[in-house]
Length: 320
Image (cartoon, rainbow, N blue to C red; front, side, top):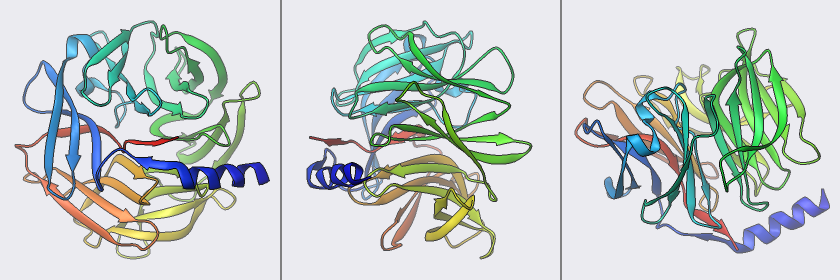
């Protein structure tokens, strides 16, 4: 534990930002049926900046994803993103994309089953994936070889659990976190990515999470959820694994119950800002909210149909 906290102190001193405040990067689409786009979104100016277009024949089609969020993770060491989207045969294409200009570097098609989520260990420089198997409610947690896209090592087989899009990662404790469903209840799962892997624990939850992000500087898991104690308001709280519930509500995404929270999210570790996607109505089907988890300051903006639709977000950050 002392080593962990020393590591956290080093991270605190070395964390650097690649973006201006309140900028999200991600993959977007518009009415074009053959292309998707890589770019950024500036929350303060409400402007998209498209760096490059990508042909869905090359990288797969995010519109065909099985789960709510496009599997995507960022490697700050090489400044690339790894993205998994299905082709027309629903086989995943794992793409490596330059995170500065959006150029496609390489693609791999060696994994046959659906990739549910991706996470990158920024310290060990390892890529991990949560993957379906041929059996219902049986999934794999595996390390992926970034040179060829093959499964390098299977770290855990998770049985009798329905997968969801929700995942996060701790590069210090080296755990891949998942939200799954067992007997119609959400279960919080921790899988080791070191010491031969294995499921470390499962914790039954007494609420329904919508998204989650782990702060590896404070060892805190933040989740979005509907707070039923205050008029069904969309909120962000700290997950307590021991109790299976929210130990503290750190902010309200929107006061109005008419504003619905969606599955996309991103976390700015340096600024302590949690971003979550929201929607209002048919005119404003997409929106972006933010909550500062330290002071509860928050805001919401809405995008019109004429703008881009996001499939995944992340904040560009790196540790020296």
